[in-house]
Figure: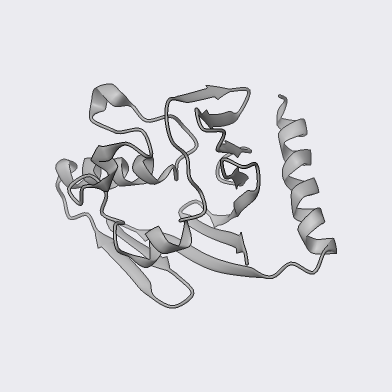
Length: 162
């Protein structure tokens, strides 16, 4: 899939939502130095990495456990597939029990991951389409789970249909 096709798909999906009476909930994410702020509809989650590379690895594992990256997990680096039992352990997923986990609950990637033509797909049918940082995530049933747009290098807005 070409970059133009992916961009057109993202635009078309956004246009579909814009023309239909769909309401959204939003999460805004911003990274400042080693601080990660997730502003959810009813709460905020802040994660401070400190100067440790181990803490950075923990945060990256958490993102891959949630499927919130546009690439497949690097299993040789200690990352886990979304839906794996390891992702249900707090040591591997700092988002457990937070507003971030609640917001992205409808996005349910699980199983083996593949990346082809700009699409990250999981065995259960969930997928992420688009060029990072912009894209659309679909749940295992093919429904839009969220749309992500970027307003800066380390600033993202996630929109989830209500």
